[in-house]
Image (tube, rainbow, N blue to C red; front, side):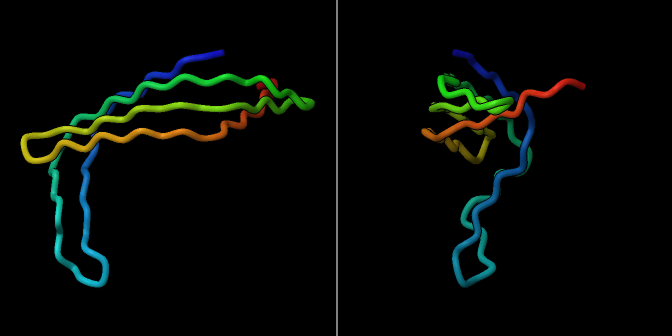
Length: 79
């Protein structure tokens, strides 16, 4: 079982399909992401399991949340 925290800076943009028109032009924005995972399946140096993640990007012109559910695979090796 583990948790993850991501923070940073981004430049979000959304462009309409089939055109060059920007629907969202976020400029500079802040970002934070929080997640949890469980690596219950282990094969050799590979560890796998479900993953749940929440991501939020914001600026004065955009608010963009995201929820993700997926499958995480990690390779653990010596440096």
